Structure formats: structure tokens, C-alpha cells
Image (cartoon, rainbow over all chains, first blue to last red; front, side):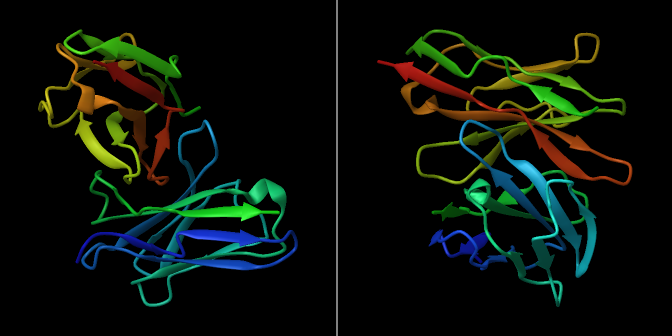
Length: 113
Length: 110
């Protein structure tokens, strides 16, 4: 296990298209987080899962965003009808329980044209 | 409100000089604070957390609850310390997540 992985690393899409990102956490970690980072900002929390249960969603997560973690392993984040304001780096992190150290993936950079 | 403030967007020092990256927080609960670092073309990684009170790569940070601060310090900066540094607060009590500051870009000049 080489750490948290994310796919794709880069995505360019046209406004109005749907996109889906995948995150594979460290295998024994039961918590998985999604963050979004825009230029000049720190990562901002979007949502998190404990096993397959989605425990919290940020107000940043509009109805166009949906996240799943169907079997408590990998997770997907889908954005429907993308807008230019969705352009950002989407980061995934995992951790064991509520242990504080979160291990981050390399991120998926989304560009909406 | 939960907030982390890093007042310096950019910080430039010379090799061998002391460095201090400032972080202030606002949180009604008992704070759990961290410093994360991102080197060029690498992923975000934990540098240190206040509960462990350890020194990593020569960096230390002390939680000052009276001043609500968690400044990161190193007595002698090295060129390899050049990176983006983020202070983060872990919130608890039903909403368990990291709240990040905007980050400080540290450049250590030769």
C-alpha cells in the first residue's frame, strides 16, 4: 500500500458536463475525507465518511455534488453540471478512527472551461 | 466560529536564520492543532501536532491558549525547508474535520 491514491490526477471538462473522481484510501483506514482547494486558499472540508456512512456534508457541497463510499473502501465524488467555479484541486484524505493524522492523496485538479 | 488565520502569505529568510510562521485560531472547544507541509510537487503531509510535543526536522510549535496561537518555529532555516505550510485545527464533538489556514509560503534563500 503506497498511500492514498486519486484518479484522475487532472481533468479538463466543459461547463455543464458531469465529472467523477475516485479516491482509494489506505486500506485499514475507516475514515475518508474530501477537501477542495482553490488558488491561494487552504483545503476546505467538503464531506467525510466513516466506513460507508456519510457523516457530514459541508454547506460548500451543493446539490450538484454527491459522494459515495459504497463498501467502505474507495470513494467517488461526482459533480453534475459543472460550473467554472468548480475549478479547483480536490483532495482526499484517510485516517483510522478519529485519529488526528490525516493522510492526503495527490489530488485531482479540475479545470472547467 | 472555527477559524484558522495565517497572517503571512509569503515569508522569505536566509539560510541559517531563525524562522517563525504565525498561526492564530478561533475555536470554542479544546483545540487540537497541527502543522501540515507541502513541498514542491508533493502531497500535503503532517509536519507536527501539538499533542505530541515533538520536534520534527528541527521545527517546534507551542500551543498558547491565552493568545490562541500555535506558531511554528525553527532556529536555523535550511533551503530544504522551502515549502507551503498550513496550520490546521481539528474540530470535535460531532463535526470532526480539519479546518485549515490559507497557508504561508516559506522561501529559504542561500
